[in-house]
Length: 105
Image (cartoon, rainbow, N blue to C red):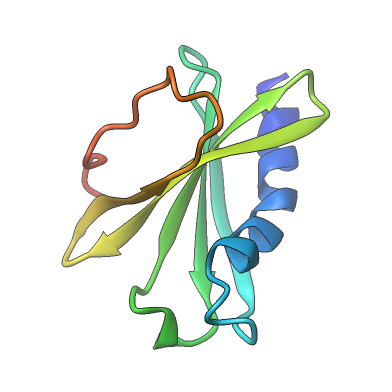
């Protein structure tokens, strides 16, 4: 089930990134990696923009895959000077707290 969640989140990530960075509609998003956490059920999808106009070289979208059918975006981290810092959170699943920073890449 985790693998399916990873695939689902990875598939949804480029469109989610485009939606959340409306100032950069021409940027192409490439999925680098997707990792599910068995304990929380959350999936981290690392994506990279095709140009640096977005302001960061890479991002990690945090998604919750429910019922294997939908990837719900909870927030995103940006790679900033060697650390993954929380860039934004969405209104979905507000009871899930995302840490201000992820572990080192």
